[in-house]
Image (cartoon, rainbow over all chains, first blue to last red; front, side):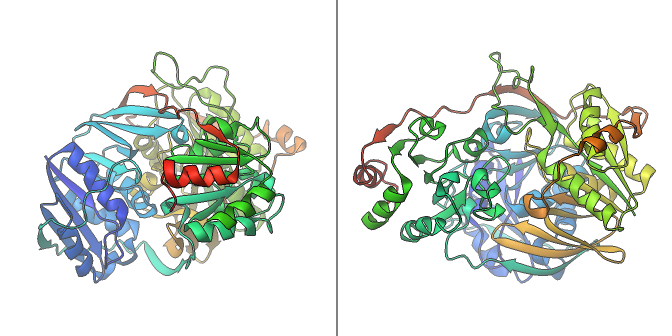
Length: 309
Length: 250
């Protein structure tokens, strides 16, 4: 078997979810090759050649692959794809964007967001926002998979010595043009990448009170999230929402403050390694999933927590 | 311009989903079914395009059992003009749905297709992209802003770490993210009016599409249970536990 992993990168470095994807490829077993498609992406190609367990790196360095436009990247992967038994990429916004095109053009199904490898054709994946785990088997000749970023221990970024092959294929469908990026210069980590998250719910009472969480977040290097109730009440913007219809997160530590624990919120955060709940209502459902619960008025507890960090 | 919108019938997002004891599937008996929330955003965006005079007609498509008519009626009550049901009792997977949509796109010739970015049951996030690939169209996934231009659409997309703006040639497939808009509620008069709107029904065979599933579900299990935690008495104890027992803060 030969496995192609399509790397998520910024032309300079390989992003962390790709190391998790290589780990999933290793669990399937077989020769692992990594494709780096981008513009001026030689450094990322070099970095990929050092990833543990990779036998070959394919570098497609061309302006048509700048900004990873789905149409062009998918066309490239389809052209290379029939040589492989499995094609994998990380479940990032980039992977989610181009990979289903690859599957459709190869006339095979995609299995999204795998969280486990059972065998070369059978995989586990969360459904219903993680409220159930499905074990699914593919009957297609090529398995097209995206890999959940929290599901496998990443392989080492250093130590490998793969050969690097330059691929001279430039496919420009001309369908889409890139205009601009607005990458938010966060002082805090992004919700889906943060190792610690502190989230506020309706108990925060208003948007200004989220400043209490900001101070704690800055000390912990944490991202700030919110429940749907807090978003619906207009306290904070929608992109902070953790839950079934918001962001699905699995940090090392999740601190839920003034969050009752509605099903749709729990669906978005219950895979966190350690959950802390601070709520004045001792009957709040959030306590049923919390490792550490503190029944307290958040307006007293949070400043106290802040002072002890 | 005609806008085609897809809607999926899914378990309502407020339902606490349970796995059947034989681990064959999740329990869908007597469970409230709704329009997939991301598809509600798609309907809203299409209806706004019509209200703005950019779109002349909004056609809503659902693929599944005859019960999906309920979700098509919901979309019609929200302002869509006409419905199409591709009726089948088979399991419908994204690749099959994309093939059916390709045929409907050839039939209907829309200027724009709007789908939800994912359905909240299978969480695949594949269908829109697959439709675009098979129909040979451009795609703008995870849209938080959509501006229709002359033969093009400029779309702001939610990507990891921020936003990306791209321009796609029309016709194109746009998939909706949460911030695109806030869906309205249907008014009673509109619910009544929706009952008179037309729904055309096809079968996959009539559209010439083979829909046999490629992926077999072997079992569905509940996720690993979290083991019961403890209630701490003070903030001090909490910080101590996090530092010395869980070792998640320093």
